[in-house]
Image 1: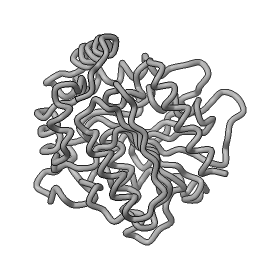
Image 2: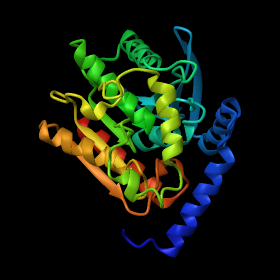
Image 3: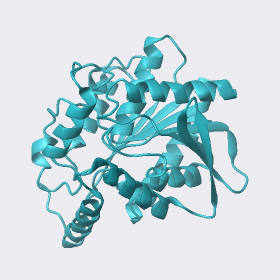
Length: 298
């Protein structure tokens, strides 16, 4: 295992403590804590946040309060293990995405497990996609982004669109995507001691809540096992110090084998969805996302 610097160890210990403050056995309190953190980290006067309702589902638009790109739009799928998370919690990412790319970002509150297990989140993602199409966007005008479980949902949504013979988005941006709910990747063991955010117990708990009796290898649940033929250009970012590292590495390999234009970047010393944190590498990562988005939107 690569040696971790003292500075990085201290940083990860801080991340672990902050994460511990948010975690709560009371699921509703956990969700509320996340919302509060998202609002604290994500709000800026440079952006406007506009609430909307999509067929009974809450969502919000995030956009720059100055001239910005209107032709293309980002559809963001938030993380939270399918059990927590919301548009408010996601502001620490959606705000950065809107500022880095100068594009408008739509985030939506899909139904959460255990109250609403699979396929509720996927049905809601499709609802958000259809809403953009009704607004007049074409599939090629949309970039789908997602972090953690949101990365899973972004992949599942694209797989579902493909299954239905519909046009696919212009590109995918995945941050620490959760791609394999069978938890068979090597990093579940090799990174267990260093991951400051995720552990086996948590992953088992949220998997059980979401899957609820379905086949865990179903590509709509574990997209790693999907058929990616015809997929749009994909960009994956992952931290070196997370148990889901293998989920990204194996997805990258599977896409390469199916001749998809895919790029993977591993961030040394970083943890699960580090892009949310107020650290220098998070800014670098967002700049790289913007570069990728500009490249595919030419």
